[in-house]
Image 1 (cartoon, rainbow, N blue to C red):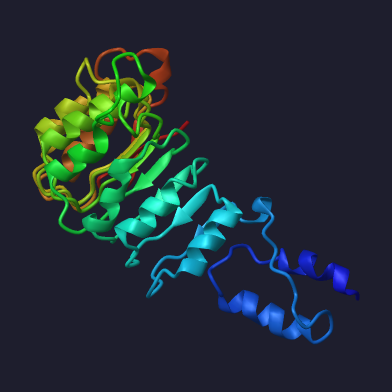
Image 2 (cartoon, helix red, strand yellow):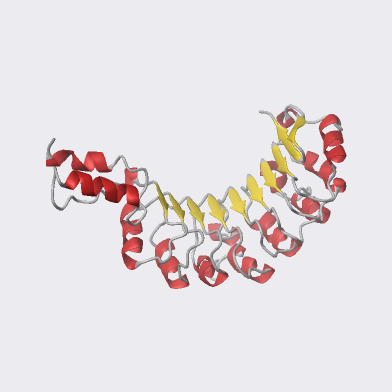
Length: 287
């Protein structure tokens, strides 16, 4: 075994976590045989996903390491990252495709309102503290300096295909902006959003909503304003294959069963097979 084989062995670590125990163990054991100061591997191909979730603090060395590795997916959930740190990161990660900020504060997350994300496909804002309609409006609206005809005029999240908003205190006012400014949305998580009701589903699936044709999965579990009246509205979406209504108090198992049994009006070919209920209030359409 030679010192030249060290980077290959280090590459077996599946993620960099600013000093994760797994990497440290490899360094300690192998350094006895290979090299007293082994180099850290920064090959971008080995660090497509970086997970710093639940770190007690985000240090400058962590931020520098993220930028050197240029990940496609970054998880900062339940950290105390500051607005200044997040702003510094996102302006240097133009190729970022997935960003997870679950449980962070809006004070920090508001940094997203200062940039555009042409490559971003997944944005996770579940259980962000103190988020209101006005805050989400800042994020969804086009940059203030955009001009008519520019691509950015459709909003910062125009290319996002998966949006997670679970547990946020938002209303249909925010959902109107989601419909207008995330036209490519295929997966939407609104679980445990207390203001989401039947009218919200009507808004998302309306004739003038681009989500009517793009939406494939929607999570509405724990939305207690929903009733069985919302179920027929989902038939407007031919690509919809997963509807999660678990823990919705006023949606009944009988209503879900009728939805699965009732084929309704003739559906276009993209609608595919009927829905089934593998679990109570979980509606699945097999591909």
